[in-house]
Length: 388
Image (cartoon, rainbow, N blue to C red; front, side):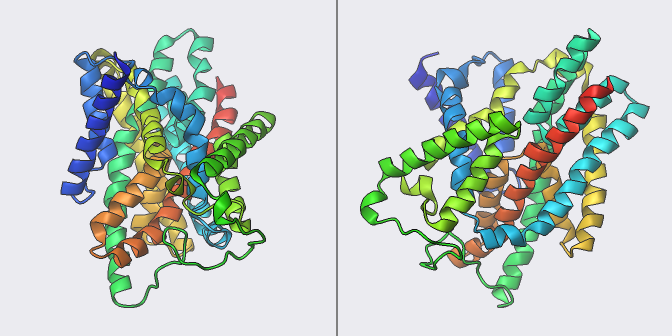
C-alpha cells in the first residue's frame, strides 16, 4: 500500500477512536475502538502491512524509548518515591495473574495453554517473546498460536476495565478537589516554575531548541538500549528512569517531546506497536480457541483484582484504583498514558480539575504498567519457560 494512503487510513482510525472516546466520556476507550476496527479490517482484507507501509513500525522502534523518556520527565523523583504503594500493589497483582491462570486455569484447559498464557497475560510482549519457543519445543504450533491470541486479546479486557474503574476513581478525585481537600499536584504537566528538588543544571533557552532536545532524547535512548543489552532488562525501563533523573537534575526539559513539537507523531508510532499484533489473528483461530482464551482472561482478571484489592487495603488505596492498576498488566504503556488523558478530560470540567485528576491517576497507571509489563512478567516468564 502507498505510504501516504496507509498513513492516512491509520490516522483516520485513530480519529474515530478519539471521537468515540470523547462522546462516551472515556467509557469506551479509543484504544478499544481502534483495536476492533483494525481487527475487523484485517479480516475483511485491510493490508496487514499497513503499519509498516505507513512507516510507523520502524519509526516506533526508534522513538518508543524517547516516548518513555518524555513520560519520565512528567514524574519527579519525590513523586516516584511517593508511588511505592503503586509498586507494592502491582507486584502482588501481577504475580496473582500468572498464578491464577497457571494453577487454576490448567484445571479446565490444556496445561500448556495455561503455562504460556499465564506470563503473557501478566505482561504482554516481553513475556510472549520469552515464552514463544515453548510451542516449538513441544512440537505444538497451537500452543504458540494460543500465546499470540492471549497477547492480542488481553487488550479487550484490560483497557475497558481500567478505563471504567479509572473514570470512577477520577470522579471521586474531582469531587475531593472541588471540596478543597486535594491540592493540584505540582508536576511538569503544567508550567509551575518550581525548581526541582535535585536540580543542579539550568538549560539556557538558546540550548533548548527542538533539534537540541531531539538530539538529547536520541542519545539517551541509545544509552538505554546499550544498558538493556548488557543487563537483559528492558531498555524502556532505563529510558523512563533516565527521563525522571535527567529532568530532575535539569538536563532534560519538562514535557520534552511537546516542546520539541514531536509528541503527536511519536505517540502515533507507539500506538501502532499495540495494534500490529492484530494482523496475526483470523476468525478460525479465534473460534477454535475462544473457550480456553475466555477462561484465561476471566481467571486472570479475577485473580489480580482480588489480590489488588487486598493489597490496596494494606496501603489504603481505593479498591477501584487498585483494580485499574492491576489490569495495566494486560496492555501496559502507552495505553496507561492514553487512558489517563482520556479519563482526566472526561472527569474534569475545568482545566484545574483535569490537571488534578491527571496528576493523581497518571503516575500510578504509568508506573503500574512499567512494573507489571516490563519487570515482573519478564521475571515470571524467565522462570516458567523452564517448566515445560
